[in-house]
Image 1 (cartoon, rainbow, N blue to C red):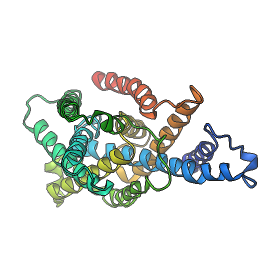
Image 2 (image 1 turned 120 degrees about the vertical axis):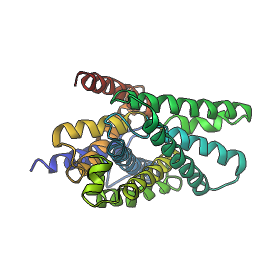
Image 3 (image 1 turned 180 degrees about the horizontal axis):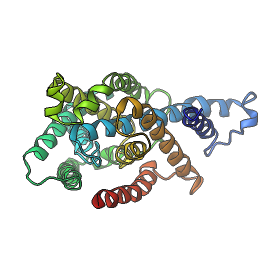
Image 4 (image 1 turned 60 degrees about the horizontal axis):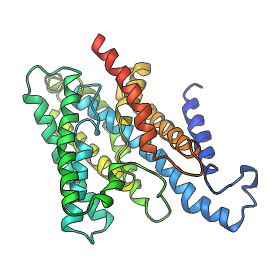
Length: 315
């Protein structure tokens, strides 16, 4: 019975999300909507809610996988330079392929996200004296270096305004016809679930994985590819959402442990619930204006992240 609680909670929040916004759509009028209300509902509210659910699940699961691959609870695409590397890819796409499609930009962002993640993995392997707190700090510094490069060249080529949407996550511009790329992450999530057992074994270390007959490097590569695809698609369609990939997997693991086959589904749903709640809050805090959801997620996430760091330091 308890397993249905997250599903019901997400369903209720998603339904609530459809009726919150500048354009009033009373839930009691759902079967007799005006032409304007119907247009708003199906053109913006439904795509927005779907994007929130998929993005929350994708980012949280990506964080969960990265934590297993690096054997560190505080690593995620936003603290490992993955998202910043994808932004660098977006800048390259805008400079060399200014008329490229969103798919072209996503592919370039994916390539840079993948390469950046590999650099981070190699970096933490060669640095001596690494610990649970040092690894994410290295990732943040690595990401900041890449981010500084992106901002520098964006200013140099007068692209800073175009880059803003990929520096700050927001769902206010999501509408029918410009968000469908996010569906690419659905099969990625399914593949993640298929490899959940293997990722759990990889999280126990290379020596253990090889001892049980697993191809450690192959599974590790699959994980990095999945994370890079998910991160680049989310960045192109939504933007950056800090801390989400760190805090949700940690909260779920405290409840259910570290076996991905048991925690992946709840991690995905919890991430969706958290992001939908943050988006609803971004719409009601200062109506009729919207606060970028990345600010809400960043504010709440940073507090939880600090608590997790303090608990990690005490262990």
